[in-house]
Length: 553
Image (cartoon, rainbow, N blue to C red):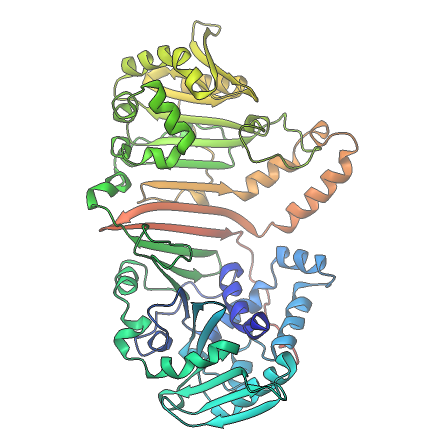
């Protein structure tokens, strides 16, 4: 019952998360404090505010034109994504894709909407009201057809008029609708949540989400153009348990090129502890030495020496214990000797075998270098100090469950080759001009050494992705198109015996994702807050008709 009654709100949230190639270049400006946030509680476990239901509905209509949406709809036995969405809209009773349909249902889409999750399967939402009688009729139909609640009751009291719908013979309300603020907004609740409507309507402004100081400060630091925002308070046990950050604010913006989510979390420690996330403007750019077929590229432009208190959280407990056992001084022997600008890249291994299915995501059971090639590069402050550390690797490697042996390639290049029980590991070498190279397999190590001896190239990032993380300390790009092309171009032996059927299915799926260009991530700090930006970028296409006929409820 709870899931069905919340289907409209869930659809709106899903539209935000998955919609693409839709909307305008700029999203709506966030609503004022007198909007939906005024009637949501500060102490909710999670809150969502959508700024304009009409704009969001139009974006939902365009979302159904994606190839991947049609492909997913076909898996559900629908001929197209539009047919699937039409069926869902009929279940909801209101076509969320149409501003006119929303207004005909009694909603004021420009006033936005909100939802608060109170815990214990209780949740409430707030919507703008254009016509109270029409909205009441809309939810009466929804309660009758979806919840079996055909008996209606009205009562006046604190906050405004409360309309409830119950099942025949039941004294408990299945759905409640409370008109507030002179009928400008309405609070909605399902089942046990109905009891929370009047207290929320009567709450003072300082108890509302509109006066949440952590959220307000985060929204000030985040971009003002957004389609929605989400707030997760710290210490509630929902995603952010006690002892973590004070709160997490997410904002989202959808345009015709990307779906972007920004995150902001006030840092509970000192401002200095975030120093590693200050980008060094003149950091060396080593991306031109990375393999041109890399589908994943990451770059760190912060000061590595500032990672001294952070690296145990990044590498995990197992490696931290191994480092402590080995006696390696990570700060002095590693971090202090790295210059800003370390890069890492992954490319699909030409020897990958896909016929045996998906591997187990456990380094102890599956060697990742059977599937991908690795290259990592760092400029050094003192190459001699790093060379001394490399000479110690054979002795230190046993503490890490691996074996490192020094060897010489043709031409006298000294390398350090790693193996562990799952096979070949990450190899090390000190390349030309004092650059530390970490690569696997050995063929990739040798190819990268040859690249370092030459002039840097254009690098693996195409022109439309080079702007990622320009001002961030950390940035990463997952080029979905390059990954798809690499899979399509694998030799026939990569698919195993009878692999032609597996390849055909895989290629069909990859072609259905042609709309998806890349996933990008950047991390930095602003004032005393940790910030991140994640974006799903879309393949630009020529304008086409996206007009959708509303589904008949």
